[in-house]
Image 1 (cartoon, rainbow, N blue to C red):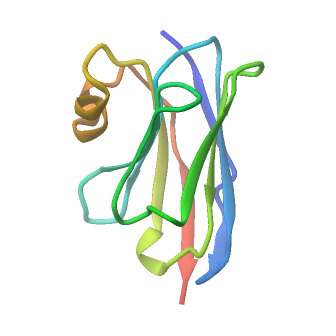
Image 2: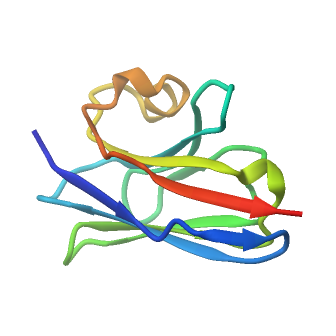
Length: 123
């Protein structure tokens, strides 16, 4: 199983920015970010299949972007204009044998998961 290591979580004020990183132990695709807020279900944030194919949740479009460094097998999540509702634990996931939209909609289809990194956005 692929090992995933997330980093970059922090506490920021509303309107601030953070950049999360997820390094995989080997080349794998797709790679994705999910998040879970306290008391809420896990939701997909973004998924990237290759350098041109990405899907973003409606709630983060225009504010979050992903970028993958294929040389280091690292997926980045740049988060700008953060809002309190972005607070949660962000999990990296990788590998999926389904259609990309299915992988994103149902995170249970992802093959590997990281342990998560906490993002706290205060108003």
